[in-house]
Structures are given as structure tokens and as C-alpha cells.
Image 1: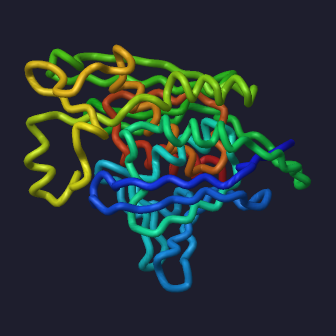
Image 2: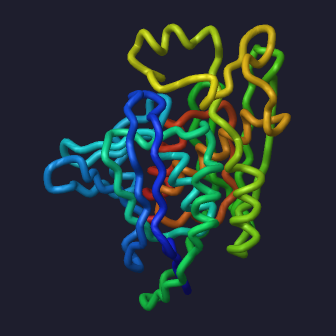
Length: 283
């Protein structure tokens, strides 16, 4: 078995979607077996926040991790990129409370990781790949997320909105066992999909203290008459972005189990509930 870390440091700076605060992120190599973890270098003693399910402290419109008084918000795009590009171990230093949104997708992260390259790390403790043995379902009204036994790791997602420009969309993407093919597929098929919002919800979200850093430069916005800031990168860009979010949230398991992950109209909260249920089944 092998794990991988980043071969060279990566630095990106940008504004957080919800906080509107500009932060700098540095992704650094980490020891084998250490996993992916954040370090709040702006706080006293630089507290470490592990990218693990147990550290999830909030799931309102993004996934937030916390440990003690320290927290880090909107981690899903960066974590999805590290996972999709094959990075098992990474030290992520950040000087503020939220990961930069950048262009609203994971494309910049994926391109930066590809440019930096990966370094192989030998695993000596006989780490075993985990597979889902029986279906696991989480329901909430007409929304659901599930993990179903399957021969490969696959993510299938469905969304349904009244707005004609979005409507009902489905997409499926496979995370193949071959690292090179998997990272190339993630970089081209999933990472470029941007976050999206609905025009009629924006004012309420802003009044609630959210999306302070959102703009037409870092998020797609859809109204009754269509998209305010076309063109889209994919005809079904919104649902591809939901797959990006799901991969990022399930990355908090450490190693995503082999399964077919199926979601419909789900949320970060449901994603994390599924991850917790998988941990319960595993242990």
C-alpha cells in the first residue's frame, strides 16, 4: 500500500464565501499516516484541526470544522481536491476562519496540486481498504443520501429546482482506483463546477450574515429568467458541484470506502450524517 503527500508547497489567497474575510492557505507535505489537517497559524499556539468527521461543528450552507475555540469554515472544496487528486496526507496552514472560495469551484486547487505533484509514501501498517457491505440510507423528507455496496467507488447525485434554467439534473462520476486516471478525471469533470445560488434567496442570506464574500465572480446565480452570469462550464454544472461537495464531505472519513454513493436534493448536513453512520457501521 502507498499513500501520497504534496511534493511541493502550494499557496493560495482569497476571500471566504460566508465571512468575506481574506485568508491565505499554504498546503505543505505531511508525514505518512498523519492525514489531512488544518492549522490556524493566526491563533495562539497554532491549533490543529483534523479533517475528520468528529471535528464537524456546523453544516449550514458549508462544512465547518472545529477543535476547542478554533474553527475553519467551507473546507469541502479544498478537501475534495486533495482527495480527488490523491493526497492522503497534508498540512493545511491558514491565517483566518474560512478557506478562500477562489472562483467558486475546485479548479484552482486541482491545478495547483497537479503542478506541485505528489510524493509517494510507503505504508508499513498494512492499511486495508474498506468497502460498504450493506446499504446505508439517510432520509429527510424527500431528500436522501445513501451508500450502496458496489465494485467501484462512484458518486451519483440528483437535484430538482423550480427554476427552468436548473430544473431536474443528474450526474454520476466514478473515483477509479487508478490514481492517474482518477485525478485527471476529477480535474476535468468535477473540479471546475462552481457553487451556485438562487437570486430570490440572496437578500435573506445576506441579512442572516451569510455569503458576505459571494459575488458574480465566484458563484453562479440563477433567477426566473435564467443565469445572471453565464456561460456555464457544463450544461449540468450545478449538480456536478453537488458531487464536489459530497466528495469533500465524505473525505472526512479519511479514506472514502468503496461504495456507490447516491444522493438526491441532499445537503452538507445529510452528507455528514451519512459519514457518521458509515463510521458507526465500521466500528
